[in-house]
Amino acid sequence: MGLFSNQLSNVVEWEEFRDDIIFWKWKNREIKKGSRLIIKPGQNAIFMYNGRIEGVFTDSGNFEIESSIIPFLSTLKGFKFGFNSGLRAEVLFVNTKEFTIKWGTKNAINIPAPSLPGGIPIRAFGTFVMKVSDYINLIDKVAGAKDIFTVDDVQLRVISSLDQLLMKWIVKEGKDMFNLQANAYDIAKGIQSDLDMEMIKMGLTITGFSISSFNYPQEIQDKINKSASYSMVGDVDKYQKIGMIDAMTDGKGSSNNSMSEAMKSSMGLAAGFNMANQMMGNSNKPSSPSQNLIKCKNCGSNMDQNAKFCPECGAKNMPAQGSKQFCPECGKEVASGAKFCPNCGSRL
Image (cartoon, rainbow, N blue to C red):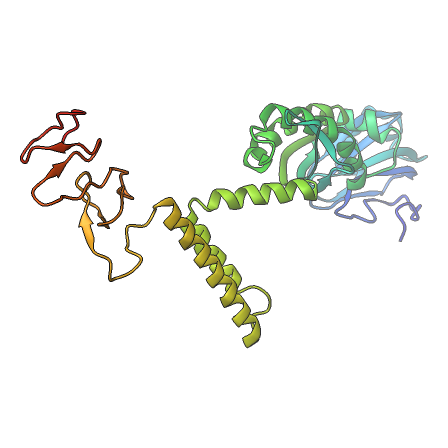
């Protein structure tokens, strides 16, 4: 059955009630004595005559026009005469539920950024929730020109306003342009407020607005991921371990050959880091068990007896020669038992 195919006047009802329709207009039919009004759950029925609202019925049920509806429509001339000649009226059926509608930017929005003269091109996606709140504005701005109004109509109107609203609130609330999701709640609240002020002109209210994701261009997303990986690796030792694990699990990892290559790669990586650590003096361990160790006179760390400087604190190593004692700072000979060097004043 089509939306306007039934021309019988004995029943006034929303003939094809669909969840995606916000309102549907029953029009250009005669309401006569004996007609009935059927309102399903989740619907309101608005009687209009000559473009004016004559009555709004919010209770669901099956009502007789003569006994239940006429008392509320006493201003209509046709009703006063008991529908003997019939009366042409319009009934607007309104879906009263809240609608959850998806939205997304059609094109990328260039958000101003200090480091990028052309701005950052960003796409955003999410949902918003709306419902009918003002019948007068709805009829005046929408129903007067349309017989059916759907979710798609609202979606188009909202998306046409989103580009400017996103730019406004991202600039205002986006503390980190490379992590806008952290401020998505504040950005969404600002957009909801502005969008609600715009949609109320049509008799609609925006009761919720959310941003599920911000999408960056691939090259910018790669840099964000790289920066995040650097922040996760805080020192060389951790980076070395991660590199070795990555090398061992690189590729499919199912053949002995691939595992052998991974082991070689990890061993080479480990050898390189060990060499670097030795050059930087980060290790206190001797390179060979046969070496003789002594204690640094300054910090007490183990060190090679032939080393000229302590690898831990950098103090000079001045080994004792017989009964002679030397200053660890300037190398001058000092008397046995002296507490300070007479040449440079350093504490012994």
